[in-house]
Image: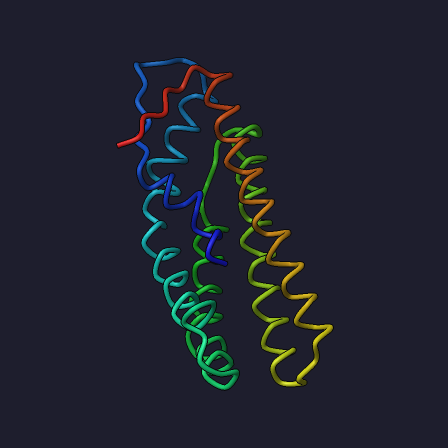
Length: 162
């Protein structure tokens, strides 16, 4: 989950610059990143920070993790997913990229729900399943980042780090 926010945090540090263009994909990509995704970075960052506050070096006990997942993280992540799904795109190319991001967020949410189930049942197999889903989600986030970069190159969109 810690890596969950890698792309969103990197994305938060980007600004996309472009001259006037008649390329609809270029225009859509710029709008998508600047108006669609950048406004969501704070939501994603907040839920990631909550997750990190009860996992890894900050893990204290299963009950704290369970309660935080159930009461805070999963409800907030569900709202975040709803916002992500509401992001509009104008072109099939940008939509395909966004679908990868939706799948990444959905996979992470599934992992969190599986983790709750594992904690309720004390089931090591479910913990392993949750970890596998987290890994799948991370891969999808990486794929998304690569797709954004590829689309930007193909349509002459300059991505500048701030």
